[in-house]
Image (cartoon, rainbow over all chains, first blue to last red):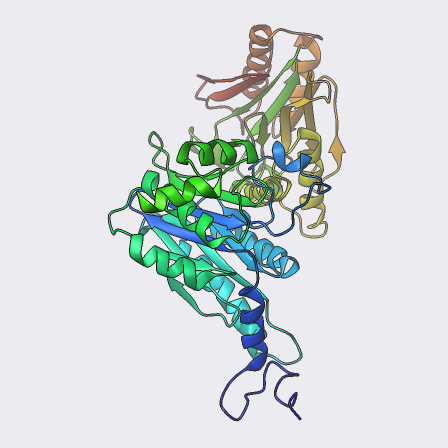
Length: 263
Length: 208
């Protein structure tokens, strides 16, 4: 009878819990880490890639339009980038939903969708799957890094239950507790993007279980304001650019990273 | 009075040597009454594709936004710019979705497409209001002055015009054709698209 309250998402257990949602969250805490830091003049996202190997064909990722390998970091709209942790198939469907929602907003109001509204739209959808019978919830947590003219740069997190919250720095996926306590120690309120990039990469290198940090295991993106147009500019780094960045930050190897921490 | 002639307006596109041109008048009317001489009916779709929407003004605004929606979705999913040929079919299918209650627009598009070898190929196309595509090799016309535009363009257009000569040809064609149409005119806008730049010029026209 242990499965009595497990088989349907819509049924509360006697303790008032929804097991399927808790299992979905559990699935995410084994997924690749995604980490975001909100800075004064932008937002930085980094993600750990889980699907790797030398037989994996990455030729499309090298010179793809927006860069990245498209496993975990996606452009959701011209003013929002999303980082996903969890079931990749569910994530693809949610990313598509987010992009459509953003374009629907543009069609209706002739303005880019505000970041919180996009998070809300996604959560309305996610919440629906925890209440209406027979369907499992989305096994995906997302980070939304974006800009809108009203609240400027923002970082949101949403989970499978349909909860969302805004953060200065947060982490989802494997070892998110470790990363979050590291971020709590190191985060400063008036941090700038150039320092946030270092913070994200340092935290990432300590959280990931692999020994070396390189473009084959890492995705990286930054959203800032274009200095001339004052419009948000989302940049998802290409593999070569990630390696160049790690070189610059001196984080190509784990050994060097240990020095950084003591310094 | 046909709904296609309510607001007036005409668009023309022409092919040149490694370049294309698209031009439209700037009149917005209510039947014979002129309302505005600053009405834009040509819009950029990408850096290399321009779309002209002659017809009912409310549908000009609506279709412009709907195409922006669909092109943005294409760009973000495919992670590359849409090609003119693909865009033409997007226009066609969008219009045919409304086969039995159509938008009152006859789109004209002009662009430069890249061949796999890296060379450029000029592209123009037009559709009727339910999306029947016309891929022409020389020029396409649409709008209230379309019959006159056909006549003048037949006389003036020749193959392999350089950008500056193409500008002269399309401008003279449009100005002279719209002078013979009461619902088009009141100034023109001309875009000359080449592989690395777009030149946009506005022309004065007769105000009668």
